[in-house]
Amino acid sequence: MPYYYYGYGFNSWYLIVILMAVICMIAQGNVTSTFNKYSKVANSRGYTGADVAKMLLHQNGIYDVQVEHIRGSLTDHYDPVKKVLRLSDSVYGSKSVAALGVAAHETGHAVQHARGYVPLTLRSAIFPVVSFSSKVAMPLFIIGLLIGGLINSYSLALIGAILFGAVVVFQLVTLPVEFNASSRALKMLGDYNYLEPNEVSGARKVLSAAAMTYVAAAASSIVQLLRLLAIIGVGRNRD
Image (cartoon, rainbow, N blue to C red; front, side, top):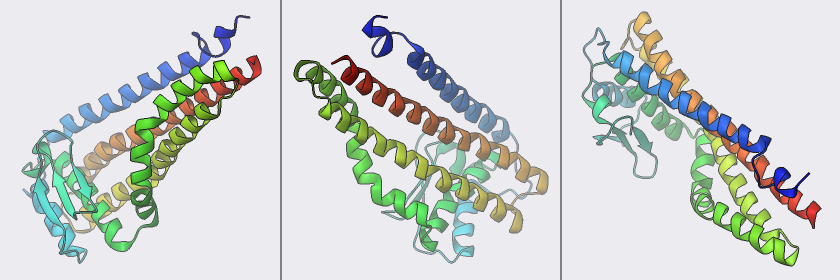
């Protein structure tokens, strides 16, 4: 069969990559729809996302983390460097079940940081490397393929693939970090009676939908890495 069929043309790898991209879009769409659904359900205690984040921090003995408002939708995150918990427009002042779930989840990250949760520590440690490798991996890979065909050496392309592998490792380390933060969040919301049992169920659906986006992204990256390695292998075999 022609060479392009195995490495660079439209083959099964492209179909798998496209399938993974579709799965990622479905997962992201599910997050949005689930969040929107439970954004319309007010919690019975009348707390806002900011209220719950501040109270949960103090109940966990954390007094050096600030809770701030950030623009956007679902832009919520915890910054371990500045020790700031930022909540988005749809969470900070909202009294919805969805808002409390997200606020508690981000607080869960702050608790992880305070307790020295190993996967979070590891993720923070490798973030600078991953930030660099994510920018240069694919350009190096493409340049390596072009050069490899001329000098019969795919070392540069392999370096690009290895750097992309660092991104995959980061995403895999992220999974326990996110799942643990959600587990902590749901437990705290129930134990401290910020949500009724049926409301905790709604928050769980929101956080579970969000968690699946990380799973889908990690799976997609693994497939992409395998494809890059397969392309290098085909190039070497051809030469």
